[in-house]
Image (tube, rainbow, N blue to C red; front, side, top):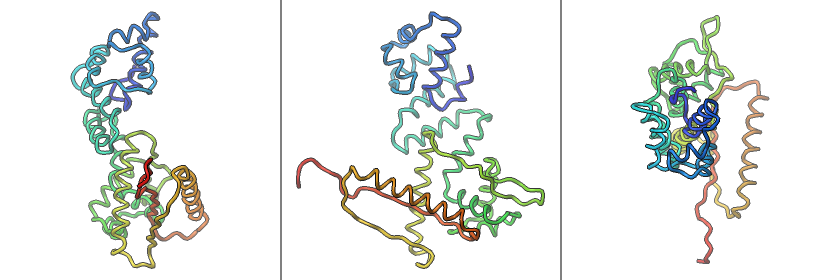
Length: 274
């Protein structure tokens, strides 16, 4: 069985633990395992398949069952807290603690997390995708709006190299690759929330930073039925895709834009009339 430090999901760790014990001893069952941690067998099955969470008071029993100690035990407890977290701030705090407990062998995850922490990493990557980068970090940072320092631009480039989002060509220049850090895992989704907040802040600042002919910031307040929200999301998704297609069809690309689309309630439905 692989090290617990290779897991981000405690459900998967417990499932692998059960499968290994079962392969060694065919008589090892859900009922036997549940008796050791004092949980209902049916509930335990749901936990192992990621459908339920164990409570904070059950963590110690699982640590004893899995024979974890020291940093391993602390890591398991952190995984449970991370898995149970719902608020963005709690997810971020729990994941950062997990990263602090992991070994250097998992440094890629640290880089992936760092990528989403700052808005300018995508800007640097996209900009180098337009023009191969020869090494002038001051010029690179100056092209970003708002501008970033040469040292920050260098750190961003180094991060993108570690993520294999930039590659060095025979002529010595760096060029963007098609490799991208995708979302999906819980920690990535939480990190993306921070990125989205950053870009929303930049959008507000753009009103004063950029001339109106370089931007388009509009708002729309409209009454709709809650059941119509999926259709609104579908239409926005189609619009995003059409903009992406427009980019690929246009041979001359000379600028990087951040396009934010937000739909959020200003008044919530209620059962009783006002």
